[in-house]
Length: 611
Image (cartoon, rainbow, N blue to C red; front, side, top):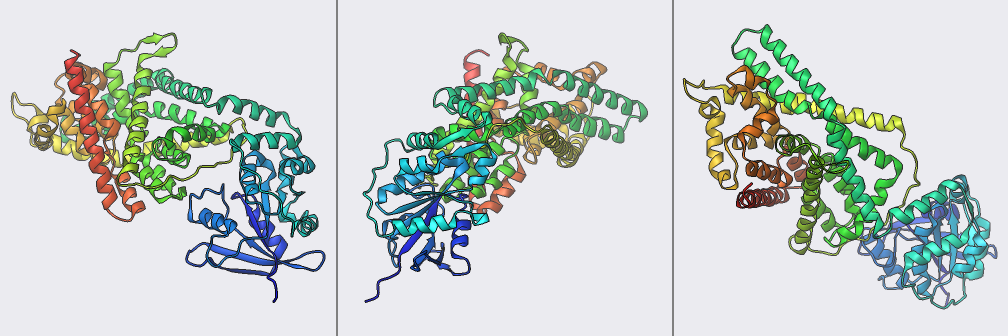
């Protein structure tokens, strides 16, 4: 009876260069197919050892551990344990590690030792590690792991002969299984540190910073401080440029009004276009300051670490750190955030992330928040350097985040029930953000905002102006009440009056479904049409709101916009990403219900407290 040739499994994390090493060892002697019963690809090939013996290599799907979080990882786990139907258990393992990211990749290697299989370690991409100033000792690493360690550069076919020799030596041995340590991450870091011969000061500083920035207690506190500083800056740094833009819009409106005779055209341009769109454009400095922080933090490498810090918190809500980047993207706009969920392998994780992404406070909410805060929250410090307005803004963003986590937890226990996925991400080194990249990012964000203001916001504002201008009010009548828009708002007001919303808000809710910023331009347009004298014309929109709205109504309006899904683009992309209308309708329904409850609770509480 002829014995089967030895089977060696090539295993490792994704992006370790595993497939490149497999291709270098097997060359053209490869077969590609699928594992029985699944769509996961199976690649196998022949390797001839120095003594002439043939060996079959099988390139297993990349995995982060023996606890699977995807079909690929499940195949790897089952093949290594000998439980995959139609696939025999490997006789040995060829473990591929990324030399430049050793501590992360060693975690899987430590788990693999528990299988009791002969093991050879390929310390791959050693040239990249050396280029980054990291020199490793393969001998020290071998002593720690109890297995041969060979330095390789797969794409250059470096180290292949020593690798064949090590496999020839290991095949047929019977190592004893090594128990998985209680803290795999801590043991991996210890072994990686023991293998370091020398490293550059940049790498040493990276590790020192990570000890603080990734600390389970200090790390989240530092992240909260960074976010708090960002929102303080949104108000503190933007005051002067916002004033410039307000003066510019006021000057343009005055000049246009002086150049045109009274009538429909002047009202359209002054009250509709300039009054409505201009009310949104003045918030451009605050949006750019927000993105200045985001782009700078991304450029330094800190945002990836923030994902790790959030992983524990998000795990409590049934999500993994994989959801952090899409949700972080949603702070700019929920549309790219929802599209970014394509990187999430777990179907239930992805669905939950899509459904809660609109709760992240996107930049479209910033004009609404800023307007109401400027009108009703006094501009004073509660502590040295800590403004009350920035504190309220921080609280609104925090409310959105906590709302998303609570919603995710409830969704994962009901309509999106299922196991959460495992999260692993490589940490980049710290660096100064490239000024060119930051400047380009700010320019793109400004262009997108102004294009949006000149597109959907202008069109919606002009339509609202037309609805709010006709029919004309008679003597003693208020234009915003007798117009078509006013009559529609009267119908909406019946529904929203119990939660403290007035006629102005009811009028703004419907057009703001196109884009949240339209709520600001809608209110500005109606107030411009209703103004009766020069004194009212010179008042800012915030000053008018402060005189016309009670504080409980303003607070309820803020609470509404924390949760309400008022964005047609978000609804459309959700339909596309979920392949139907079921989940978009569910998302809109639960978010509107949540917004109504939050606004009502805020209003009733504020009234009860005598505010």
